[in-house]
Image (cartoon, rainbow, N blue to C red):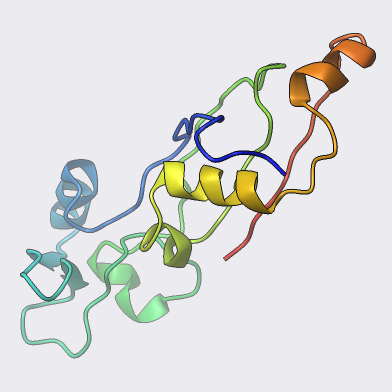
Length: 138
């Protein structure tokens, strides 16, 4: 198995939290209301300050009740080139990233992966044209 600390995490996306500056501006422009994070509670997206349950995310599929206050299903798209130096890709939901840092996730995969080879060694045996993607879902 891989050793934690051998691989370095590179974040390819960011969380869509309602108090993130770009998300907050977009929500407010659409008439939404965001309460700031408190010591015991994250920031929340609302129709108004007195409206039922708020949401801790600003983008989601199927939450039609809050579509009019800034919640959107529109994805944020980024393009990143994978290289021979990339060992794997971790794909996970906000429920994972709420509890793990990017590096924690990479170290977890490194500890759990059953790689019977050294990544540099397998690239060399395959002529350097190897791509490996491990997907971890949450």
